[in-house]
Amino acid sequence: MSGQEATVLVIEDEPEIRRFLRTTLPAQGFRLIEATTGQDGLTEARSRNPDLILLDLGLPDLDGTEVIRQVREWTATPIIVLSAREQEQMKVGALDQGADDYVTKPFGVHELLARMRTALRHVARVTDAGDSVFSVEGLRVDLGRRQVFVSGKEIHLTPIEYKLLTALVRYAGKVLTHRQLLKEVWGPLHVEESHYLRVYMRQLRNKVEANPAHPRYLVTELGVGYRLRTE
Image 1 (cartoon, rainbow, N blue to C red):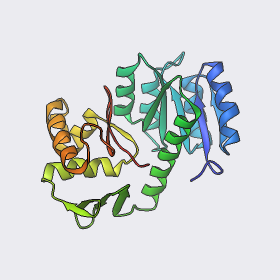
Image 2 (image 1 turned 45 degrees about the vertical axis):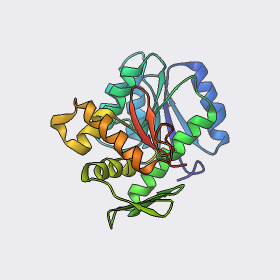
Image 3 (image 1 turned 135 degrees about the vertical axis):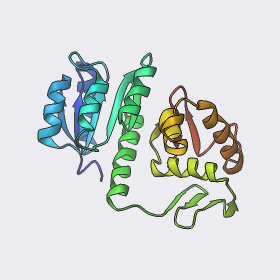
Image 4 (image 1 turned 120 degrees about the horizontal axis):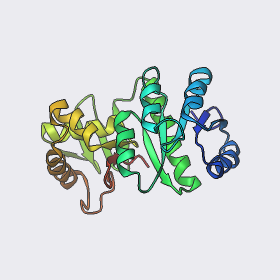
């Protein structure tokens, strides 16, 4: 889905941010709906069924994570959180609650549009029942055959390394928190065992990255989690 077809619900109480989005998004082909409180946002989400939601965490009536929790009771519409730099723990909580991504204020238009395109592409990929082969810049993961290639050469991964990589592939382009990845790979009883994740992410990078210290594919989101780069 492109901007030409997508309706975006902005739930944001700061006039400057709304003015910026009102100027920027329609120029890129997006249709805009605005709400200034969490309750109004929930009402608009139910009645207008937007393709994507941009949500401020610091709303005057409801905590942003509560808005996410309620939205996730009935729809998988992608939610991108707009957060201040000091709201790191709130960002993590929002992602764990079901948000798809975040941008940190102040943000640039190109960063925001890239996040929005990624979120809409992910929805389209899931709707299309998904391709069994993921590829980006020399990395190729064949989910059907359980094979991984880097620059045409097959890479052999342990079962845990493969499970970690495929979890990131399923949500390619989206940030996954430490808790989300631990739950996906090791199960709900291990969501606090972050040392597991660090060890296996290091091993995985050593196998798929040309320079593990400066990863091209498996990107760290500081204090939050990891993202598999798609472009």
